[in-house]
Length: 147
Image (cartoon, rainbow, N blue to C red; front, side, top):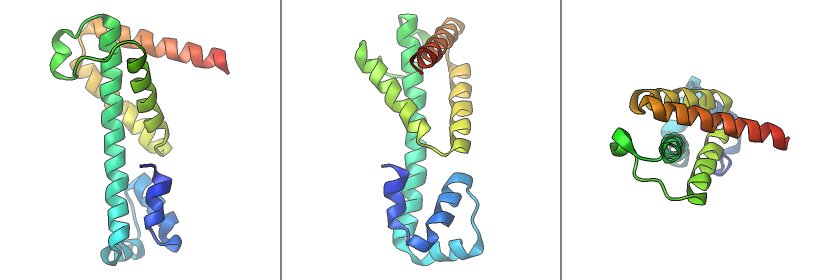
């Protein structure tokens, strides 16, 4: 569920405060008081943070699966991800995960990139890290060429 759909659960006058809270985690006393009595707003907060968490998980899985697929085998990282689907399905999974991250506020995108890099750095063997770097460079080159 996209943030614009989730924010519909929040009263109009509190939507800017809601967006700020979702983006930064900070809220003023008035907004926190509002959350105490509006169950739909509480649900919206839970949905927004749940969606962010799911997006980060999908990105991590998709990037790891793509890197492993490009490397040719699952190697020691088999316990981290399930075997990737073949060909186009891997590409679509990765594209959807990247779209999920791009739908996050800028601060969260940076945090997502840092978290994914940290997970991959700690879990992928060196040759799969090199395959991931080549994959990222290839995506970047193709994006620039299509602009």
